[in-house]
Length: 323
Image (cartoon, rainbow, N blue to C red; front, side, top):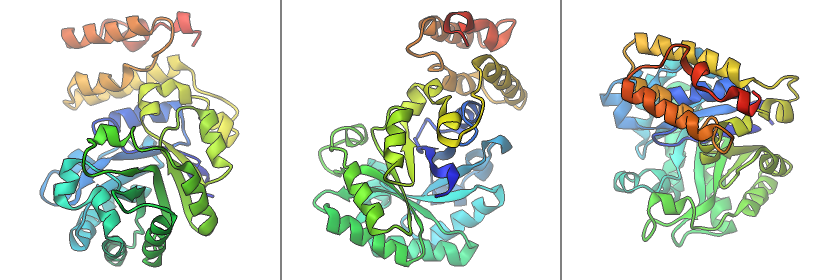
């Protein structure tokens, strides 16, 4: 197992932008970070730096793309290649109306041959083997035989890494939020997938809330991917490097805030608005004494359009949380 796959941050739209990834990298140096999904045409016809730029400290960092077209996927990955991402991942799990209308995301689970074509096309064009993030099933297509055949067919095209959101998706009757919560978790199905394909890297995703839960999964599969639990309580993962990789030291929140302050000032000087820079910080003290006051102070800074003298450290309830 690749050590940097033991724990990873799931790609989340309007969450895992470069600012949140930078903050999380200050909290854990070893966790693999994933970008928001970027659709192939957005990279081909849009502004690549806007979607692809990231801070060098973010490594290991992965780009997730959305595509249903082998030719366009290859073009998009070729554009991204110069940015030096450690991995490019194909989204085969998003059930949003946009993904359904475009035939990508979870709709591709109905078309394993097309996923295989995308994998081959990207590799032939760029030499990059896509990793695949998918569900356990979609609508009426579910069960161990279906999931095994899907992975088998895509692996035949060369894919070696499969990240499984351990829920099926429904394209009718459930919105994207409900699709993250209503279908029951099937981590046992992911465990069986690893037993069926021991040569592949299999990562499980879905409903993982704590480091202890991640460690339980790591006894059965190669990695655990966490999404909203990292966004909602980022400091809960500060012990990840020590517990999962044996690092001797955990970060201190004062040092994290000081480094993020320097990052914030550099981004402001480049013209980045204050709001997206402060947004990742709101949950840094969530559930702790002083956490509400911290959020109120950040709100006040947004209204004033500036931080007070002393910056983030001056606002933080560091004495109350002992960090």
